[in-house]
Amino acid sequence: MNVQLSDTASRRAIAILPDSLINKIAAGEVVERPASVIKELLENSIDAAATRISVVVQDGGRTLMRITDNGCGMSEEDARLAFARHATSKIRDVDDLFSIQTLGFRGEALASVAGVSHATLITRRPTDAGGIRLDASESVIGEPIPCAAAVGTTIEVRDLFYCVPARRKFLRSDATEFGHIHDMVLRSALAQPDIAFTLEHNGRKVLELPAVTDTAERIAAAIDKDLRGRLLPIHHEDAAARITGFIGVPETARGTNRHEFIFLNGRYIRDRSMLHAMKEAYRGLIDPHQHPVAILYVEMDPAAFDVNVHPQKTEVRFRDANIPFRMVLGALRQKLLQTDLTPPASLNPDSSTTSTPPLRTPAPVRTSSLDETRQVLAEFFRQPPIQPQPALPLRGPGESPSIAPAADSMPPVVAEPVPSVEEETTAREPMPPIVAPALNIKCIQLHNRYIVAEDDQGIVLIDQHALHERILYEELLSRVRKGPLESQRLLLPVMVEVNDRQANNLERVRPTLEKLGIEINRFDAQSVAVQGLPPLLARLDAGAFIRLLLDYLDEADCNIGDEALLHEILDMASCKAAIKAGDPLSATEIDALLIRRHEIERSSNCPHGRPTTVRLSFAQLEKQFKRR
Image (tube, rainbow, N blue to C red; front, side, top):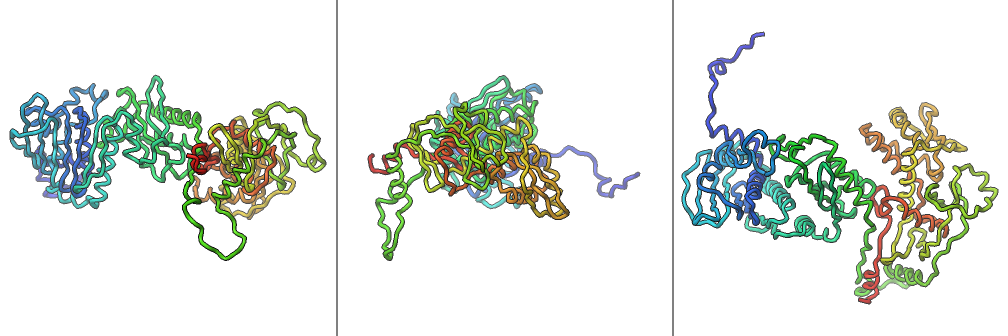
């Protein structure tokens, strides 16, 4: 088929573009917004071995950006070449592209910046008596002029995109653009704690971070001072890579992923597999909608990845894409499992001593929660420890709660009690009776909601529902990993009304439900019947559970993998089957909870991320009672 060109197009001949136009086109890739300029110039300052970097910005970077460092500076010849296209000191041949050790290396940054702004470079080497100054605008580079200057380099960029109005009008508000600049400086400061950074916007100093040797101190100063003392160090090394850094304890989790930082050989990157590994490591420790605080420094052979796949160099391509995921997940999970994540209790020591309650009409008045807690604690320390009692068989659904420990984790059965007639008629998976060893721990149940126990650091307050939920979750997960759970038939099926879509959703997840011993069958066109449950979920309200599952499947809209679905179902089932706040527990059942708390993983949080336990240390107690 012949294509007829317009008269105008047919008359145009191929021509070499002028440098000014070439640089404007290149700037479209390199200079997306003011923060892109800051990134390129910061990388050059770091590569120049600077120990102090100052960033001054006006109007979100539209009118002025000035970056000053005390690095090695440049000679007059290098300063001239710095504004030339495809000029760089970082690479020399093709092989260098696959073993890049520096941050800035494109050789187009200053040329692109000068093509869309008024740029000025002032530089001086330590061996030079004075500095030199070069001005560049729309790719026209002026002659170097001698000037007074401190050792290092200052680059000033004014009126960004003044000659490309179509690009300038797409810039966002000053606040938005400065927000991106702030993030860029913050990333550089986290990657280089041994460099001092300052950031100023419209005459106001926003960041002032002195050089430090303690990376955790830089993280707390740059992100949130409340992170001090709440960061866990990470160190993992194998043949493929080395990973160091810090992660926050679960209660520091945030609503966005803005505080997840990954630096690969000093370069900030966004890698989906690593970010997913972070979230997976915290599964069950934080709310599914929250994100952990994590700052990770990864060191790998430069030949194992390619950083030149994205203009901003924030995305990389790994030779083996599985390595970063396994590495991050393994390092974080190991640290979290090895750490006591019990959060400290947060108390206001002056809440009951410095204020006077308002006068009320005479009536029975309940004491404040803090007064009540103090009174209960005083009584608690006067009580003898709960002694092990003869084991009781597990009770059936509808009766007082039962806690089922893992069969292979309990000590040998010392004596087996004779079950009552009622207990003999209850069909149940054979389980050894609960026999609590002599823990010699004082513990009480508080308001049928919390268990108060002592440990070597003070006392711990345990949410009985959250802890039992975690126990059931880990027990179910452990058993289903070994094979499908045994299903116990219900005497009477539980009927749940469904529509066609809901019935289809249940049919789709049937294999996962069968693995868990949950037997569901279609009863008629408008309902399904729950006909079997695993013994561990004997307390489960089957109808409420299925309705909750149906709502989740409707919302998920089939976009969920088998592994994620398994964890979601376990979350729901363990929550619905766990003992509730308000359920009274026997001494034996309390002992069983405390035993299992020390045997399972991640006992500090329920599967939804809520804490199961908080600790009230001796120091906090003494402060509450004015002993210090």
